[in-house]
Image (cartoon, rainbow over all chains, first blue to last red; front, side, top):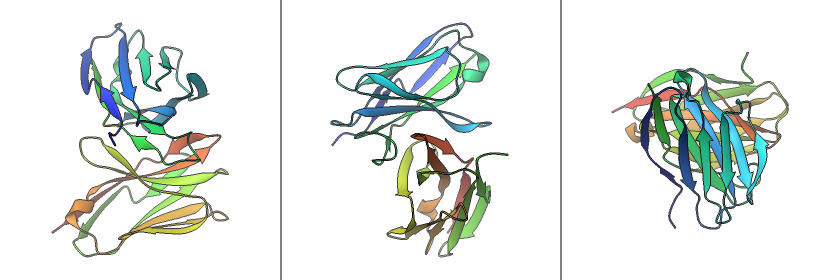
Length: 114
Length: 107
């Protein structure tokens, strides 16, 4: 069974630009969660999608958004990039969500904002 | 103060040693997760537990809900165990993470 895949793996952008990251969950998994990891703040929860609906949201500004498609693939978008958005962005999939099933993490997308 | 505190931040051990990593949290939770992150970023879920103790191979995780404390033990440590170990607590169907413990096991 293929694992969680994320594209692209590396990305360099400049301040003010926007970026879209993609996550393909394990086949059959309906929940996709997104996380941001920085050296200063560690891992932080961004949001969770289940059956194309945002079910939960972390404490991030509205510049961070996401969506989920009918095949459970998910994208997250960051608009008006700031230097502080440089981070490793991880997605994780599970059958029905956190707390019920184990989460399986993707390899991450490393975003650098110059 | 962080909701989830891990200790130690860094740990160096010799191959074969018994290792303990601690996690304390300050709020009510529905479950606690232990994760392993290797250089390069990939994260693997090791345990999800809400009470008692779980064991997978050389890894043992325990949780004491009353004391709001969990421990991850590694028996007979090996250099391939070198990684960052992250504790995360589950509240309102969200994960809140500790800062991680960087473990280095020398041969």
